[in-house]
Image (cartoon, rainbow, N blue to C red; front, side):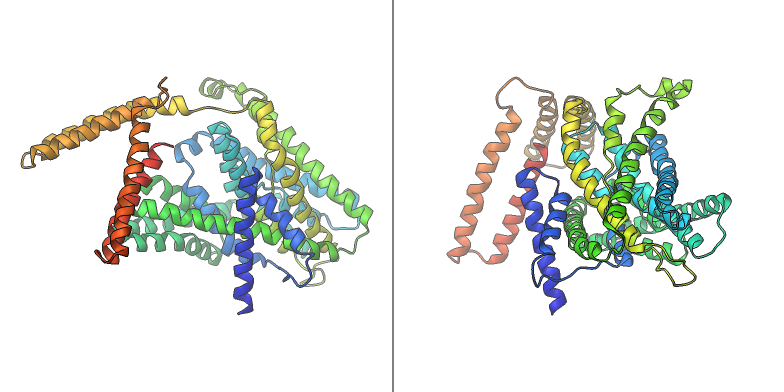
Length: 524
């Protein structure tokens, strides 16, 4: 009972914190992290401890999966070069450079342990990057690069942590061993993710019940990660590949009802998991600080060095990775040269989060399995401090930096033009289908459907930018919502007076709700 109460309290606080963040215009992870830190000092408030297995198997897979579901595969493919440069190249470089810097500050600590710390703090967080990038309104390619990087860099970082931990335990590890380990785990994860996604797609095609579709979708990331872990491959790569495959094919796999319902379910799951995990990070900070045995001067020195190295390395990597590749004629002719402001914003978007939290907890305990002595508590504190500092400094200033550098892209006109052109073609195909199947249908029904197609086509063209204060489609939406409100009120009165049973009200309300939600979607 006490555990249930604790869960309810944490979820409630995370919901209230997220609502407060939206009201104040702040990033929700930062508000929840600060709230957790403040609550940890309240007398009697339950202590929190996140097991690494819970994060890596219970929290990270669904968050990565839903992010992959929402990622455009064509856009991801076009941005694959910068994504891999960041997710593999920069993470690897960061792990070794940070490792050597920490080893210089703490020469008595084994280099393998320092490299493990570098790998832990190397990967930016998928949750933070996506939330901030979308809220800021960054160009679509920038958002794709940040999302793609945060989807794939976890695998690189976690593999390097395991390799470094193995070296710390006395295993001989060289460059060939690291390359082989990364290749095997990534390749195995790719194969498992693809195979499991094909199986999940087959199930979705066979299922006709939207609730079962939702259940299969929720189970998919957990099944994928469990199978990948059992086969000792990269569960992160497997989950990401499964999400990309299924997300790209979702329009062909699910019914409209299932798609609408599944989107709502995943939005709720992501919202709750993201809130709780950052709240728990804040709650753990006090105990992490209290467990440090290293002197304050050394602690601050190591933390400051690691943070500065992370920021400077990302900037030092971004500019050559952006511009040197464009010296190749084939790339130069295919890709437009971005303004320096674009890599600057990408370089500053390096917030850390869930993976850093979980990976820090997997550091081996000194004295066990031949692991030599090293300041494990200090390294865990540094990982937590990096999460706080990147969210506090970079997360809060990224919107301002993007605004000052004018790295914003208004795709509304381009999107509206593309939509209008495709809608025109779609309407023509729909009218041809109507003519082919309407021989036995009443004339009034056929004409009504023709009018609907004409209205949809006109609405798409209106979004290109009418000079009127209110477009016809906007007026239609406004008036129809007032009509729906009146209809809904009449049905409620009839139910209250006993003239219709509850089932009739529920059925009518569902139809009105669906129509109203369709009106809202068409306006955004």
